[in-house]
Length: 111
Length: 117
Image 1 (cartoon, each protein chain N blue to C red):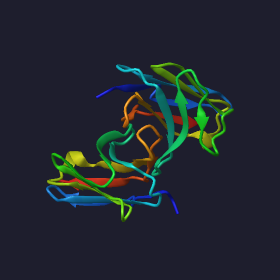
Image 2: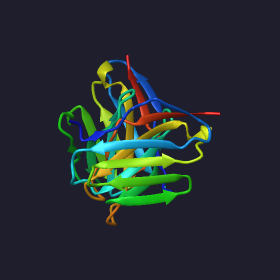
Image 3: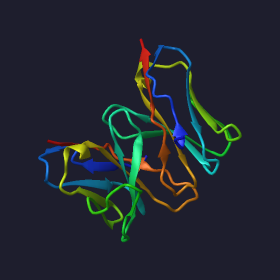
């Protein structure tokens, strides 16, 4: 079993839809949970990070972490065509360790 | 946010040649830099971690004699792919962090696409 599992999609939604992206993981030692957005042929860009369990909201984005289920989610409200990208979940054992990434989910928001 | 640059952004080389990729933190000093590799439709896989002035720590399965990493200063790390072969063709991405707080965001470079013919 891979450390971090993420459905690669692709996921296609109409503009304005609510998007739900998810990852599961196997190692309970992970403490930091991140979501990155990556446009084609570019480096990843940090969207949100969460420490331990809980929710975090930033504009149209909400990140949720459920450590008991080893499950994290990213919700995008009122999705826009500019949100079309690959979304990668990532995790860390501590704040100074390398990131362990999921495969990424390719999202297309259709106008 | 902090800016990390990579050079070159893409390179094509012949099999057997060596290629050097530079990763620079432009507006901060990075105590730690990470090198990742990403194959098409795959996730980023960590290759090595480097701290300024120290030898890099390589992940299992990554040949340290083939992928030479030098972190000579707090703003520059280089990855040299020696005797490159077609199977080394990939997207190489570096990240840099300051490493002074409990949580240290990693800032990613734009990546270098290597194609070995």
